[in-house]
Length: 187
Image (cartoon, rainbow, N blue to C red):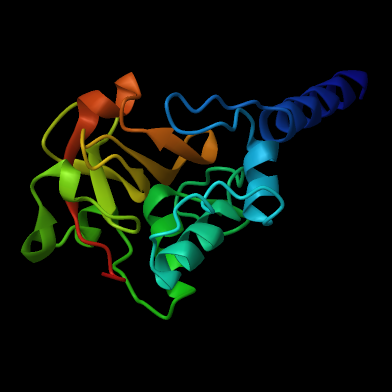
């Protein structure tokens, strides 16, 4: 009885630590260092998409919607704010705009809308990466949130193993795994 209670308490503590207390550092992405700061920004209190004055209204709304889910935990096969996998997150965000996209990351890539030069990326475009192993097979997807048109570096919002987050394309894990991009459904 006592050992099962200790295991239960340890599991709850681990869950709380993993979901509620994690700090995320977004290298080269912006001025926010924690999930809490980004959630506050998404609520409009100190929005870091305000500086993108040239964005179309749909791009601003897309970012506002996507940032709202930062910190939501990863769940394999997840398609709701209780937990998302990468393609489930993309599907859910675009569904808010009445845009239906395929359910899997590989199916979300549209070769007819391919963007060959990363400097041509726009907010809302989709970026694709290999999965855990470096290969040419799509295993991960994210939504572009920022672009430096001079260098082609970008930030993207996605659901990773640690939950929904914004990550820089310069992050070593994703830089090695980047495969391709295509124009997003709102473009």
